[in-house]
Length: 208
Image (tube, rainbow, N blue to C red; front, side, top):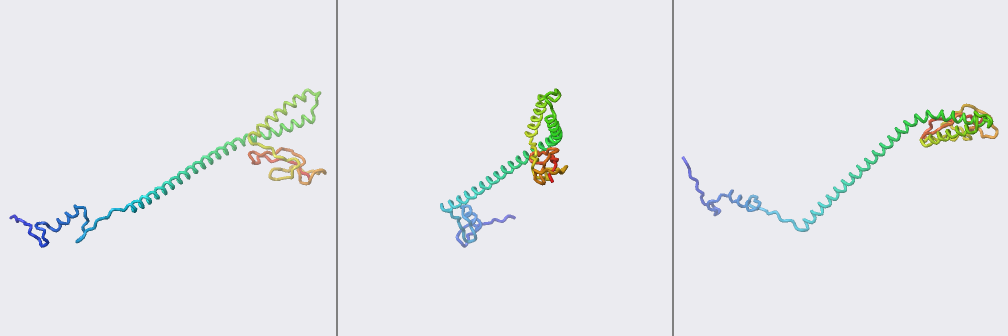
């Protein structure tokens, strides 16, 4: 059984139009309907648009500044890491060289003693202790000293200096009238520094 529905005239005068259809028609026309009334969003004024643009520009500039600061910090961190790497590499190289150089120091000391002995006891008439032979040994000594200096080895100034336990080792005491008490009057073995660090203390005789 079918029932025909007929749109009867309504009291508001909209023949055949339901209230819901009326509101839908209003929404389709771009109006916001809320119950018995509807509001329309007003457009922004030029002043409001300019204010919004200025705010967006300020935020963009702040973000650019933050990114630039982050880049600068990253570059500084990278430079510091490279510097630390170079310092560590140089330190490792110096430590490796120091072991070899320290082993050469006794040879230098013995060469100095031999040369001093030759110069003090040599004779021009003795072929085995001729002046040319002494000059040859002195040349070797200078070359070896130059090599050690180029590698950062520096001889500690000792003779006539006040005794310093950090760089001196007293192996004897004596009495010298023309020297101050507590000063070094004789060097038994030279002392050396390598890149500012003491690698061999000097063995000395100290005046009482």
